[in-house]
Image (cartoon, rainbow, N blue to C red):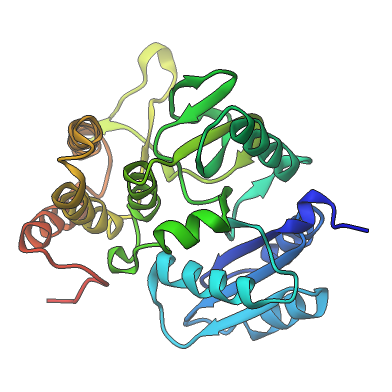
Length: 302
């Protein structure tokens, strides 16, 4: 008797200083996939007890000696998953804090099959919404929704796409890894497909109260809140944008223009309205400097 469709999926979960909540997340994930690989990306905190729990549940645990970044961790997990006896047809990439709705993987697989029937070459399948926000869309082909650049977590990637265009770009370390894979797939004639009914719960940065010159902004009496990332992330956001522009601006000019405008618009807003603006701005400027210099990999302290 053949495997049920979801058993053809291996989930790869990247971990960094995980807490006990990861155990429950992986237990729920195991109900929707055939195999789970958890990759500890060189966590400095002692998480051996948590990793042992995951192994006792049936997850495969890969321990990296040093922090290699999201692409390096996921690539290590993908290699381990593809060498496993379960012989997956699809890889589902996951962050440690993401949660899937019931039936999530079945919905992504269904969207993949419809896209294939419609003549679409599928590079990845993404959910229709993330934490209640609609995923970027890029039109439709017949009754298949096409997506813009996705986020890495909750992304279903056919192994045949990995065979065709390769693994994730480790030189980026973090930020832009999902975008680069999407652009590389597009250049190879593959599409990002959306599963409109699939929903992912995932933290999209932190929400902070907006203020201007120390005065809280509260239109209509309701405090305004804006989304920011950790200060160190702005280095990678701005550096990697420039590295990807060098590589893809000729083949993806619309993406290039929209991405640059979005990044600098966001930086202007958080610089004006969010606390911690000094560190954030310094991090972004360092990223711009290193991006123009063509520097990649993990940031080297100076």
